[in-house]
Image (tube, rainbow, N blue to C red; front, side):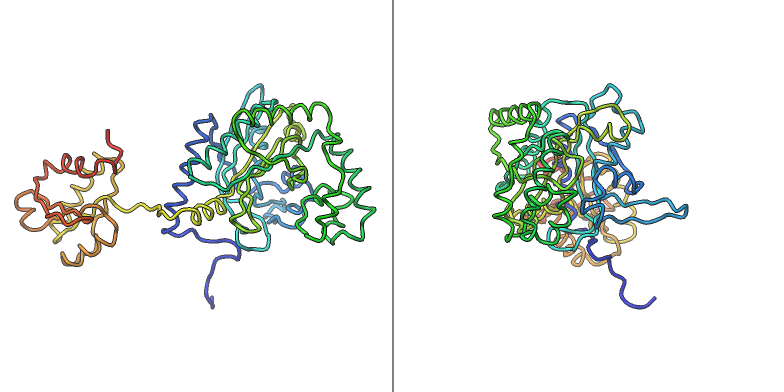
Length: 429
């Protein structure tokens, strides 16, 4: 093989200096959604192509242009998942999770879409998704939005706005689609190529166009609120009332339609203007017909997904703090005998302090060299085992973050000494 081996375009490594921030963000979100009663489900990365073609919609950009689809050795058509909701519904039906039950589920992992890579848009990207099944009222819509708001608060993020809309029932959308087709057909010469392709089969997506030349035309288009049935209008009114009562600020956006066919009634996006064109951090909505569409009983549902790459990028530009996991303790070892004793002592300390990050010096080196390694590691303390310490069953302990003098303590006192010196770092009782 010749040439340099590199990652596939649009699929990026997450390097060790980046993973602490990823773990921090993922851990914060997972902790919050667990507190709201959501349970984890782990889904396959590959599904049958039919699952996505039927649920997302064969005429959507995702299915028609962006999916990674291939035939396996049995000529079955398989696809790398472009989103998580369809797989979650498939799993719930396959394993009987929706039968007379309320389910609140979450998942995390990579998704795949063959889009043009750019800032904030990758071909392999990561999402945390939340899906709630079996709840029909606007209260679950409101709670999901409150949960998202809490995530932004606990990640200390501002400048995030909530865009809110309703698409009504399937019958509402069918009627509204016909109205849009008639309206945009009368202005066909003002539509760009993408919008002309969507005109007959997916006219709602024209409303979502970012083409500035069509802005005036779209603004004058018929409003979906003039076509809402009473059920959808009441649902949306109650949702707004619940959000108002909870002091959640939102913007009503009648042009927000989302790009997937399965949405109905509530749709929403959390957006920021700090990431340029790719400013959507979280998006979702209701999909009350999808479970029934795949052969299950009528099951109301709502879900959303958070894009982790964009969220982490926003955190990086919004915060001057560094998230990392340096060791608490670096063990400096004089020779082979010290290494044997240090390995055993280190395991004893790890057993006593399950949260302790202890980095053992490996590969030898002089005390001077090892102290330099200890300092570069970011450790708070160095433990030192030399010949005298081995002979007397003691250990040197030196703070690496101030000028205090090195102490010598018996092995028997290490636990109490570390407990005292690392109070606040090990979450000790």
